[in-house]
Each structure stands twice: as C-alpha cells, then as structure tokens.
Image 1 (tube, rainbow, N blue to C red):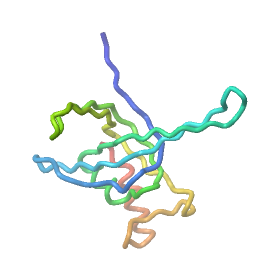
Image 2: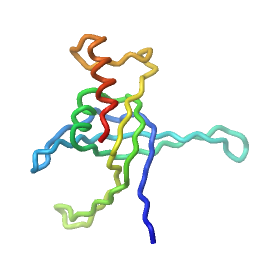
Image 3: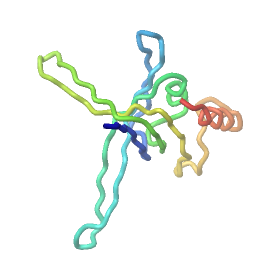
Image 4: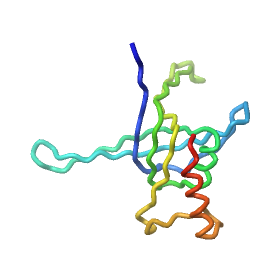
Length: 138
C-alpha cells in the first residue's frame, strides 16, 4: 500500500522562531503556528476555532525563518507530519505530533501595509534579501 504524508498550512506565528543547532551542526528553527477555521453554525451563527501547531524547519531555511519572521507574521508552509514519543523525567510517556516544514513562504503582514523588514536593515536591501530567501527551495 502506498503512503502519503503532506501538510499545507496558512497561519500566524504564535511566537518568535527559536534557532538552535543539532549535534551535526545543522540549524533547526522551531515556532508555533495558529491556524483559524471559520464556519457558520447550525443556526447561522458565525463560529471560529483555532488550531495551534508546532513547526520545525531545518537547514538554510531555518536560518531565514529565524532572521525574518516574528510573532504574528503570516506564513504559508508545506511539509509533513512527524510523531515524537519519549519518556519524561517523571517517568511518564509523552508524545507530540508536529509539522516538519519543507517549504516556508513568507507572506506580507496587513498590519504594516505589507512592508516587513528585518531589524536593523535598510528597507530596500531587506526586501531584496527576503525575496531571495523566499526563493530558496528546501
């Protein structure tokens, strides 16, 4: 039987990305993503729910995510689900389902009129760098 593991999400970061290095030296960035769903209930009332997802990004893309993205910023990502299981310090079994992003597309934020630039960089240079970073495949 064939298998298929693919996820596409569009949402907003719930916290600034955290960058760390694996023992191999490869960078990994981790952040939370909030994805909203809006629908009409049985009686026509507007309903909304939010799904919070943990995301990991590896390699050069991890460095770009850490450099350019901040809490609240909208992103579109494609990736796969990964299930992690471990035993906690208290001896209890723990598990977590997360997304490993294989492609992250930075979206313009409406809050700032579509202009996002990394801290400390001139606006034109930052826009060119961000466009270049967005074009880098994982």
